[in-house]
Length: 164
Image (cartoon, rainbow, N blue to C red; front, side, top):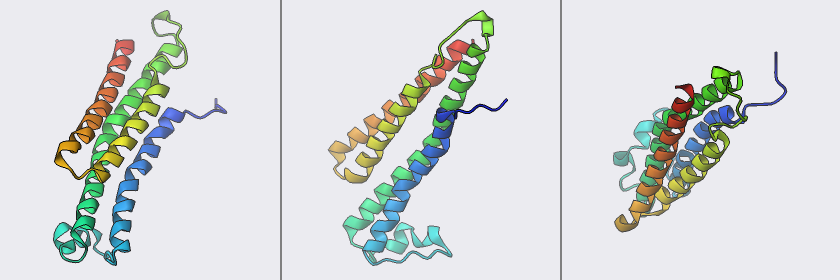
């Protein structure tokens, strides 16, 4: 039977993929605004550091590289986020259907809170990664990465507890 409501946490997975593309689009816009035209027939090569060296100002190149690294890290974290969301949905559905005759609320794993916290932490992480170029301040970014990874790990742990 079709439901008239959407499972927003499940939709958060493709939403995070789209969110992950933002730093890449920003990185490309930095180059274009500096007068560089990437070659769409061979984009990875035309966006490599060796292809950009001397063609854009060093400050732009460094910010471009941080934005691309942020993009890559978001993509690398997508499977962890997806696993946490899917594990939580499975745990919540199993509990809602009466697994072990346990009646539970709709958000027994705190999935909605996790998704909101994940996006907030990853947004702060992305902003920190792109804007912080000082080594001593870069640990802010590392701390935000650890918080996000910890949130996902804890979410999977909560699902594992429910599923036994």
